[in-house]
Length: 155
Image (tube, rainbow, N blue to C red; front, side, top):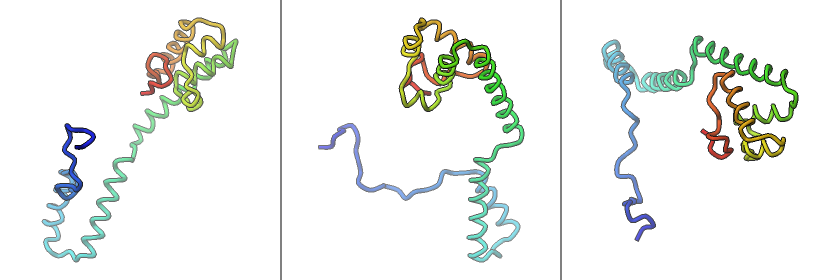
């Protein structure tokens, strides 16, 4: 009896692997069939297949100038919010920990710091930390990295 009785596990796949259907690929096949007919050699077909595969892989990861500009503007807004917060801070260590917690920076993820632990370490209320986090995120126009200030609920 299997470990999970609701699942029927098969030792081998029942079908051969097939790439997901892509209308662009069909359109390209039709185009080359119409233009070149049967005049492509196997080497040319292989080269063309590699070209199309490389192009599709590149097009999935390529960003447009507009997308890069929007990302750049968001980054400037984030850096400005960090600069403003740190410049106004009377307790830079606490401010940096609050920024790290709100952005989910790696040090926070590794240490599993929560809002409650941060508040306790600096002798302030949980609400004071929460307000500061939300004020910073609103200024940076970002969503919190963690749900409810708990370090393990990263999203």
